[in-house]
Image 1 (cartoon, rainbow, N blue to C red):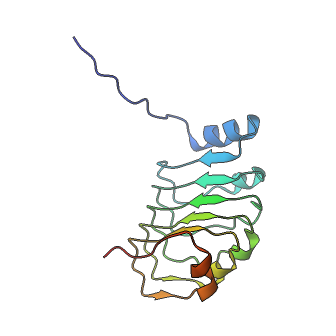
Image 2: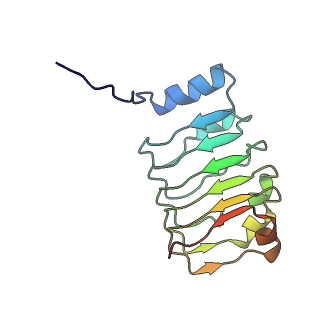
Length: 149
């Protein structure tokens, strides 16, 4: 019987993915599609991360990620996040790509304007009513998806 080639799915646990990242000195952590509601505290030991992909989970809030000074890309899209107010965005001087699309955000906090390296901001498919960001941020952006009409 003919068997189709199927894309091999990851079966790694969250701990396995973190361990692999730490042991191999990787700067990218892919914890997408894990059905997690919180990022584990242990993630903080991976201080050299440049990319965190935590999309398609069940995150309700964004924990303190201030230990990741080298972070350039953060994808927390397709979660259940209702607010970004508690994140200290000024702690990410290198963050260039932020994807917060498909969450339950009603506003973007003004503190996002402190992302001095931000070039890509993707925040469509939320419940945005207010965007409290400074005009200077919009001038800096090379790519913006704010609303899906």
